[in-house]
Length: 184
Image (cartoon, rainbow, N blue to C red; front, top):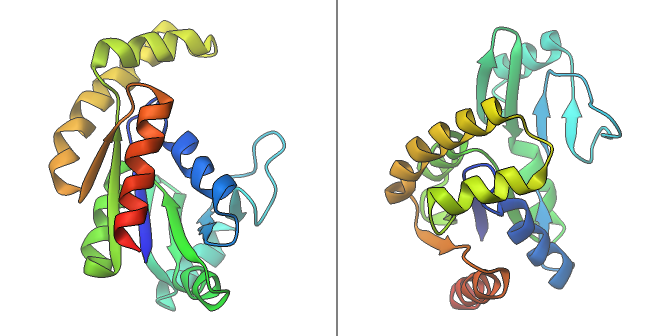
C-alpha cells in the first residue's frame, strides 16, 4: 500500500508521517522527491530531496522517469521518480508520500486504489493561526498567506480518502493508527 499525506502548512502532516516512521521503522519508508532547487541549510542529497540540475530534471521528464512532477516557478521543479517507489517496494516497505495538496491529488489520480490519500486537517483556521504564530519563525505577512492558502486547500479535502483532524496529537495519532490498522 502507498499512503499519500497532505495538509495545509502547520497542520501536523510531518508529525503524523514521523509518527509512522518512528513506530513502524520496518514497515514504512518516506519517498524522497527530486527538485531543481539547491539544498537549504543542512539538507542532504538523498535524504530530504534528490537535488538535480534543471537539465537532468528535463531529461528525466523526456525519459518518462517521473510518476508526477510540477514546475512550481520558472526553472523550479519538484517530482517523484517511478524508481523511488519501486526501490521502496522492493525493500518490502510501504511508501509514504509527504506532499503538497496539489501533488497529493495528482498522485491519487495516477495511483488510484493502490494508494490511500490522507488529509491532515487542523480543527479550525483560528487554531491553525495560533499554531503558526506559536512557531515564532514566520512573519505576520507569511502567516496570512499560509492561512489564505490553507482555506483553499481545505476545500480540496473532499478529494482525499481519509481525513485526520489534528485537534490534539494523541487523538490524531489514534485516528491515524486506526486507518493504518484498517488498511492492513
